[in-house]
Length: 190
Image (cartoon, rainbow, N blue to C red; front, side, top):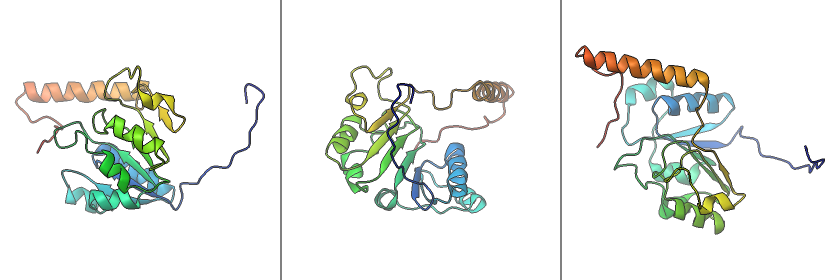
């Protein structure tokens, strides 16, 4: 538009589509609420299942293979641990619909980037949105060479308000530990 070009293109609605959320921590649960508000079906997977939260928030866990097969969009929200490193590889990408998109809002290393690039180029999936790369900045990444990828420089949650909440939460955790109390949260590993 700024260059005087107005190429009319139609898009795709998310209402009625299926969102697969891998990682049902605070961000995954919030995303699920937004997705449901837009009329999406939601499939959930987590390495560590919290059945109480599932009941409270109204979702059910499913196997990762089913989530990948049935989802139109797969959104990743897991920490990088030994259990999650490389969890989305070529085998997992081949399970997805050819029209599906992967959204990595988790950590670089959760997705095998060369496998993602190959799957995109082979038409095995339609697209990807990436906020976190294995190496940052991702200089020379093949993923930056294709129009099938939307890339952000790890700033998906970079707002003044988010920074304030993070600092406040971190300070509360530090005070808890210094006072001999349990931290507000911790990354659980298997």
